Amino acid sequence: MVKTAIAVRDVEEEVFRKFRALAVEERMKVGNALTKAMKHWMEEERAEGVGVDPRNLLKISGIIKTKKKVRWSEEIDEFLYGLEK
Image (cartoon, rainbow, N blue to C red; front, side, top):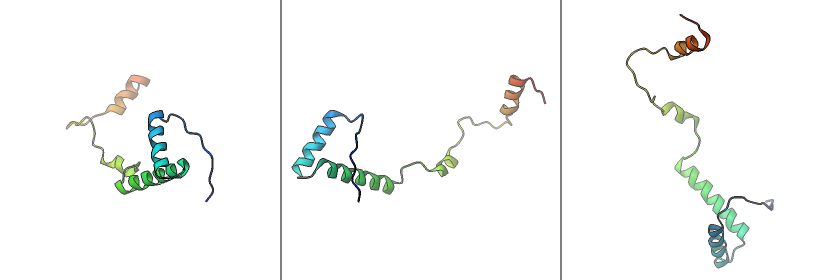
């Protein structure tokens, strides 16, 4: 496995200090602890099924529910382009 040096922005200083302290308590290198934490997080996300799934778009119901037939597309064309049906 190839290891690489990285720089990470926007890490809260207090969170990193606590993380590093825990790594030291466990006698781990910070890089190994971070790798372990990232793997755990990815497995947890996969197990929960959370993530971007395009099939979820099919589950969205409309915000505006109306019983009458709407012609929004035609009304927009009429307004923007002066087209009339």
